[in-house]
Image (cartoon, rainbow, N blue to C red; front, side, top):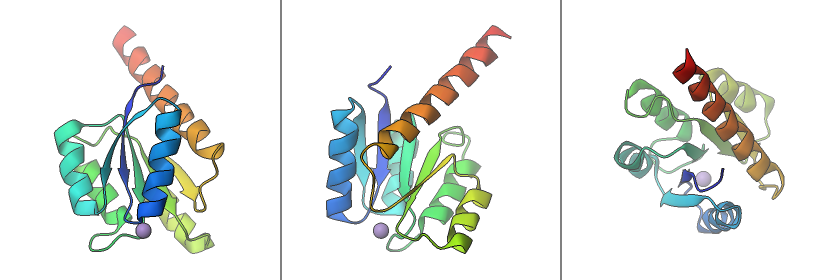
Length: 134
Ligand code: MN
């Protein structure tokens, strides 16, 4: 089932356009923030089904923003995919240890992104269906 709402947090306009176009092509609805602070505001306001979080952002970084999302009862259930230009192993490790549901490296691959988004959204959906039937 497509049509889910995805919040994109990304400070680079070209990357934002690519992510938006790709997600909309796959029939997702998108909302956008160019800073972590604005992303947190929108996440609380709209409670999206998933967040794509750039890690390198002006001001607050994406990992700190992710921690804020996890601490807030309103947003703690929302899956978050980290998007980073860094392929360094220690950065990757830091992101995985932080608890992100997914991890994508730039440049964004047009097949990998929708596949990972779908897999995570489907995982969440079946988890909540299972909870409902218990
Ligand atoms: Mn960035």
